[in-house]
Image 1: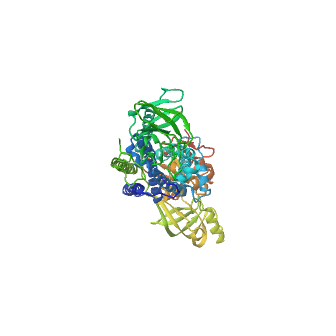
Image 2: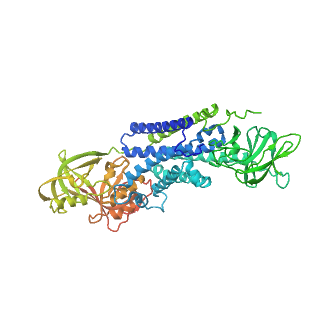
Image 3: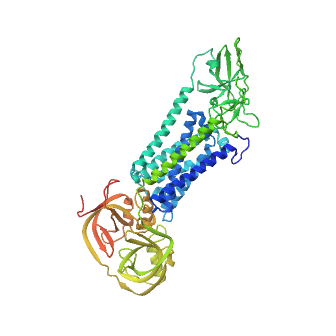
Length: 353
Length: 278
């Protein structure tokens, strides 16, 4: 994390990430081109570039979409999530090469504006088998462009995390468009078992991973309803939370992470202000709640990022009675100081009234 | 109590080094992705339909001497291995050659009749496949090198095969003969539409089970251009009815008056049958 904007805040892990990523991109292209020249050397250079980049971009999109749920299912895969935006921008660059070569090959040097030609040369919009699939690819590329162009914390901050996240969730719209772009394009033309088979495996794998991650999240987030009084709701026993870790609960639409540390308990909103990462799956390091996604940090007592950072999350009152931990789901404004509840097994303590 | 600064079981991206189990997981994922990606590339490439051995001599212009004719479409008839071969003339990009030829003839003050031929030297980029060829007038007006003698009456050898039904695709000859690979089918449809609407004469391509391919210049009942009329059917599997003619070394197919172009199923069979209708 950084409190100023720089194009890329390089560190060792990002460098390794990008090195492996672009090594993989060149390896894929080398294998694709080598196989093509061995088995079908008659292909033209333009068709080779179009097919290689189209296939690569689609494979990369599958990997990108798989990283999220895989990292949720098992946190050991979190390094893949970190710097995923470089993966996304790289995928857009590859897809852009595919799009530009298609535009030149099929729509340029004619009697119509090339962009207009994408939508007007084939006008069978009312037929599935004759549908102008290139228009679907155009809109998907447009979404990927918007995502790549705003893939920086400058835009995240200025658009607000909610708008930014909403924009970047459109990757699923792009994926849907691309499924039909591929299905009604190369799959229909080649009529090969392998094309349809691989497309099916990719789709089923992604849907399966997302369903599994959602189920795990549903199981992991408890919705307690045992009330201490009008305000406080039972969260869990003291021993149910590991030291420096959290218990996540959903009470009255409040997504709350209750952290245990140094014989104390504090509660903050579970959503990181960077990219809505799950703070409750993070850990307290150096006295700060540390988000598992990109390492954004907050002080548990007031939900504020340590200076010079400015991110803040809502805080909540907590209470410990004996071994039982309670939270009041009424949020305090972001960054409000709330003293932690102290764990003293013999007598009740709380940060509430 | 656990050490508050213990970072071994927690991953933070801005740290210099990921803890062991996180690094291992990332390496396994990266290797697996590379392997699956490589397999996907290989499987998809190897199982492609393949490409025609057609040739577009991109970047290489050839000077050719022959007879320029405008019937049935602009063509340069050249002598090749003791016989006459008709090379379809096409323009640069996705345009026909008529505008360029008109300008050349005007510039040279030549009034070439529709049924005449004129000995000329042209240079352009050759496109050829399966015994059929075309010449792209790549340099526009500069494609014309010179003319020799007076225009002669063209006397093409014409034989009719009678009424036939053809099943196949309507395409542009420039791409179908080699500029694009593949120069047919759905992905190429937009390009073929651009080419035909840009004045390149449409051809009908019917492939047979034994791998043979028939290319026929597609015209209206009176030999007129029908570029605009066929646009909605380009690169679709269709059936057409009309008269199949051999004019010198090119098949010409004249659509029957009032006959419709019938769309077939996407993977329907192609070929020629002796009856019309049905």
